[in-house]
Length: 512
Image 1 (cartoon, rainbow, N blue to C red):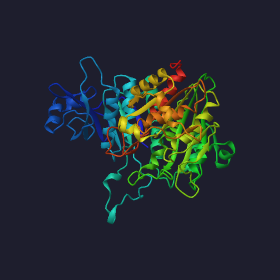
Image 2 (cartoon, rainbow, N blue to C red; image 1 turned 30 degrees about the vertical axis):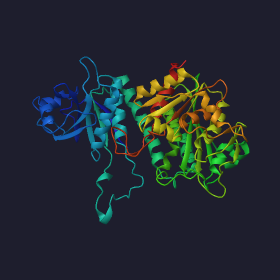
Image 3 (spheres, rainbow, N blue to C red; image 1 turned 120 degrees about the vertical axis):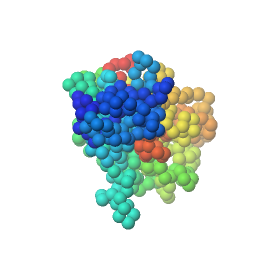
Image 4 (cartoon, helix red, strand yellow; image 1 turned 135 degrees about the vertical axis):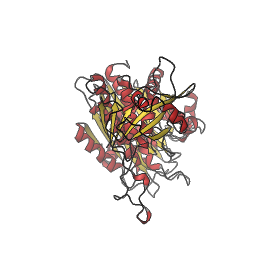
């Protein structure tokens, strides 16, 4: 695990294996960002010119390594691009700092310690650099062979250890705001990386039972309350959605309730996460080429789990309850068939037209159960529909809600913490497409606007008068391309930062 320190050491004299500086695209070429003055001085005031000679432009995420000049203790200087330089009098955007720090941390894998001399004019900027560096240093190595040897004993270069220590230069370790920002960044990054680990874990090791065990272990470590309903309790309780989705698998479903409570809290927030530990599509089997990454279909539950633990670690003055709806969707002789009718925990009946629209079934049971506790608001998180990916791409999640102001608040919160999102409508006319001749509702409706149809289905299972939002993270939850910024290949931990900030705002009374 990468360590984080706040350091008062100047960039020129910090004892580290590398010093990271920021550069940007200016009107006349490369601009050296604040924080790097001492490094620039060591290069005779010509650091920008040297970097331009090496082909650097200051573009976002661009990384350039060069040997340190005389007068610098660190042997290597790493210049990372921040994108366009801000206008005179403005400061660098926190997300630009976060991404730059992440790019630098990834480029320094295998390094023991690096000093980050990026612009940290206030505690918020220091937090952004800290978060970016800690998230960028992430690596999922649990299934690597211990000796790191590849074919015929050749060492694999991509198995280098993550950056060992991040020192935020100019971080003011005795300042309360800077210290609190660093502590929050560590807790937040730890929990996002917990979610990433769970998402990246193969389904033969992470099934509903083992996922529930992870929640129980975390609850014990951080003083959380946890309750696990196994298949017997789910059947007895009438959780037809969870049981219907899970009945085709040898690994039975679970519903986990994990809660952080604060003695002075006057608000309660319920988070509900889709936790399909593997999604084959069931009898409505996914086509070839669509199964390989379906271990990630529990990303919503991972995000909820991580957010609750983060809230506990931060001691937030809010009661926050996470509901993890865990099941494995497999085809077998006992699997739910298209045309079957399930009786949900709410008592409503659902005609299953497509067994690959299973996430909404497990979420429906969990939403009803969460509603029974009358929270002030419910937010569900799910890798729910391919339609949302088609609408918003791979980096943006959609937000639907039964309250426009709440939807807007969540969108603003996501933007504030650096997560891309977009508010989506729930057109009432699409509800008719889910009418069933044999049940109260079908789990499928019109093909066009499929992501919106899924939101309308979930809305049916939210308790009356409860403010609710649905985050469809199908696009950004699992990144299949090359790493960028602080985003790794594989599980990303999407929505954790948004949920934690939502909890912080709720604790502060900023959401009414």
